[in-house]
Image (cartoon, rainbow, N blue to C red; front, side, top):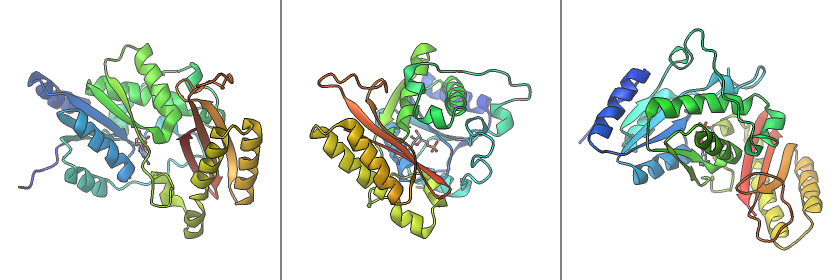
Length: 283
Ligand code: AMP
């Protein structure tokens, strides 16, 4: 049996569908994406499918989370390929708003998250980023009025920040985090991996290897500053330019206080040529 994939380009059409499902007592899960879908995204779709009766995937390259000089103009796009992948995963609806639908002329509202989860790490290097993410995710959650929204731990700080925002704004959608999907050699899947040259792609898994080694040393009780300094140096020698490699509280992303049993997360952002890679692992 072949089914056609249903798409919606307007908030009105999205709401109409979702309302019908809710009237039928179906639960609905949303998976927000910027497209150029890979198995990491599709794992979120599978998670949504296990959680809810209906699955909505949004594809929107959010202009507001890119600063001047970043990769908005070259961000990979493959709508046809994306739709084929989503069809094969039996998605119920794909929401594909244009820029004008998302940010109508005269759009003038912002959402600024000031809590500790949003401050430091990514924010230091991409100060515009979380404001852009916050406004688009707030809009998507309000537009879709879904029971669940699934986000990847790949963007760990983003996940924590969105959780905080949804709680602060009383958005009645449960935010669910899903584990990172990796290539066989350990590289975290990312749409931006498309940018890597063959030589860079061969070198890229060293980031995850280095992070694993650091996590092992930290678990064994090695001094945190020493471990991070050594990791930074090894990454630099291997040709990476390091924005940060830091250990934070796994739930709050605050600096660790040194107390026993504090859950910790190692997070890193590095450049390989002109490609920025981010990754994180539990310590
Ligand atoms: P993006 O299209 O990059 O904005 O990502 C859309 C969603 O997919 C976000 O919640 C990401 O965290 C998630 N995601 C991206 N890559 C991965 C991955 N390798 N594993 C799990 N989730 C991912």
